[in-house]
Structure formats: C-alpha cells, structure tokens
Amino acid sequence: MRFLKYTGYVLIVLLVIAVSLMYKGDLSKEVVDAKYANAQSRFLDIASGARIHYRDEGNKSGNPLVLVHGSNASLHTWEPWVKRLGDEFRVITLDLPGHGLTGRVPGDDYSPAAFVGAINAVVDHLDVAEFTLGGNSMGGGATWEYALVYPEKVNAMILIDSAGPPQWWRERDQSVEEDDSGRPIAFTLLAKPWFRAIARYMDPYRLTAQGVRVAYNNAPMVDQALIDRYYELSIREGTRDATMARFASYSFDNEETIDLSVLQQPTLIMWGVEDGLIPVSVADKFEVTLPNTQKVIYEGVGHIPMEEYPDVSAADVRSFLKAL
Image 1 (tube, helix red, strand yellow):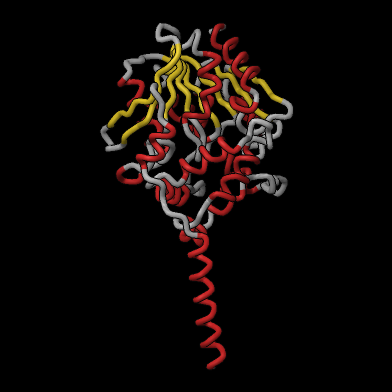
Image 2 (cartoon, one colour):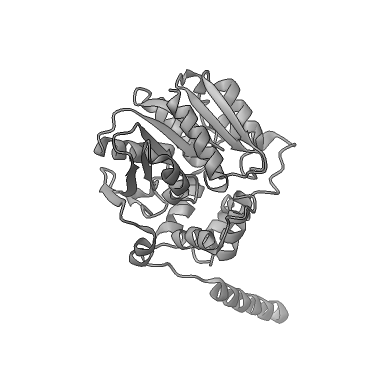
C-alpha cells in the first residue's frame, strides 16, 4: 500500500512537470492584431456582440465575391485570389467567429447559424444585396448554409474542398473504407473530450505545423511565415477557448437531413485530389446533388487550392464568374 501511495505521488509530480513543460500562454490581442491586420482591415460590431474582422478589396464597381475560410484558418487564406481577381471583382473576406482577428465571441456560439449571421451582418453593412459566395472546407459548409437561408442574395456559389451536410459525415463515419491516417492529428485529438480538457493550456506549435503541412499537401509554399500565421492566430487571447467550445459542440448523431438539391444557383466545385481532410469523392457528391454545377479537379493539390495553386484556381474562378 505504501508503495502504491508513493507511486501515485510520483505520477502526480511527473504529470505536473509534463504539463508545465508543455504549457503555453496566450498572445495578447494587441500583438497579434498589429501583426495580422493591414490597411484594408475593418472591424464590425454586430448584434450578437461579436467584433467581426473583414476586408473589402478589389474593384469596388465590380461584381461582389464574398469568400469564407475554413476551420482554424482566417481570411488571409484568400490573399492570393484577392491579388489575382481584384482587378475585375470586388472581393470581400471575413474572419468567422472563433477565428482570425474576430476571435472568441460572447456566448461562445460557433454554430452554422452564427456563421451565417456573421456573413450576413458584413454584407448588409456593406450594402451588398446580391453576390457570389464561396468557401473552403468549413467555409464551404457556411456557403451552402447561407444560400439555404438567403437564396435571393446568392447568385452563384464556389465550393472549394467543401464540408458537406451532416448526413454525408454520418455516412463517412460508418464507412470502413475511409482512411483518416492522413488527416491533421489536431483534428482527431480535438474530437476527444480528454484532449480538449488539457489542450487549452498546451503549446500547439507542433500540432499546428503538422496540420498545416498535411492540409497543404506539403506544398513548396508552406514556409515558416505560413506556419507562424496559423500558430499565432491559434493562441491569440481567447481563441483556444473558442476552439475547444466549437469542437465540443460538433455532433452529427441527431442532425436532420439537409436537402441541397433545392439550391439552383450555378455552382463551381473545386477540389484537390490529394486532400487529406475531405476526400475528392465528396466533390462527386456535390456534383450529383446540386442541380447546376461545374467541377474542376486539381492533380497534386491538397485542401487549399487557392494558396497551393493560385494562378490556375483563380483563372478558373474568373472564367466561371465571367460566364454568369
């Protein structure tokens, strides 16, 4: 009994030491915002109490293109398209609640409805009545969610390696053929309550670096500055709390089935064959479900075509938009 008692004390001491070595405090909002805001950055206080970071760039007289980033990303992911499409189109980007320089929001609501509300608040503030809406990954999910709520505002959609409706995730979870070994380790861990209990206090650098390399398919453009951007935004004051709350809220067990076939807007589906997060087979699901689609598949590209393959992907978007 005495041996077990002392063994328990030793384990507690070792655990305390391990946690202290892994501990990483937050970066202040002021420091992070000063680094990642620019002259085009604006901040909008909305009814929910959130302060939304957005940018309104490009040709102000051009047709509006609103772009929504993916999970754990930020509006910075669209900078290559802003540079290549801004001569002709008005490009509006924003940081969703819990992300980027928007960060944690009052009430910790990071639901699809909250994302739809944030998008709508920005376009209403900018007096944009009709626009093309595009999104990557989780932002693709926010795109079709928004189009279901406000179909009259969305004249076209662009879905880039997009999340699908809950029933598709349920089907994937039940499939024995799906291989998640290539996914970012952080996403797998964040799905587990025990990890979320300690992740708030851990230094996420190594998980962030691994996740970025996987998401971008180890593309040559993955450099230290890109990894630092994801890392520093992830430990911005309040963001880890928001991330834990968001992942804790995910559940596909009791979700209703969502019918995407009602969306009549012309839709461009864009996908990287080497996507390790959402397989290219999901592009086929969108193609057969949505009634008015075009599909572009990129060989050798991962989850983030707009940054990995900016020239070709932006050219495809330009062709799509000019044909509307």
